[in-house]
Image: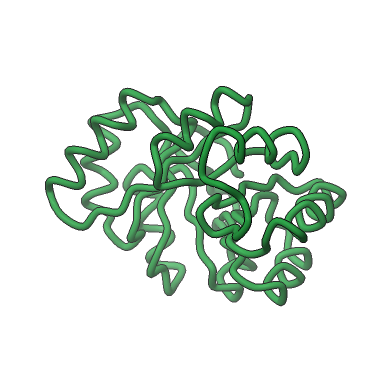
Length: 189
């Protein structure tokens, strides 16, 4: 499980769990370093959803600032240019792809196969058939998220090829993977 943190209250809830990885979708330029430092001091991996952090420009200089000053483990972005800039700065990258129609899927696959992000987050996350189809067309690890409401949806995503599931629903963070369950590559984030 990956915690998609959308409020300061949920940041505290995350720290009460055993989860190791968070996607931060909160903060702004004045507080984001404190959030990242807090999570890293608790030995958590932190990925910033760049487009959700006000005050950070979505360009090469914005990514340099994040990499050198804020120092997250990586970024999540829907923008392929930000993925490339982040990779150049040594940050791990997660490309977020919204599956809205067939054209979006084809264009998204072309982009990720060219850029080679470290992982691909497919949204919405309640689409096991699409997860399975996409894992057959790329060797990029798949993270799925969005609209996840219960443990069965999490399990279905993992069973169909996702390596992890991100959710902003704190009650699901405690459940995580069933005991003994691991992602398709054997790791638990």
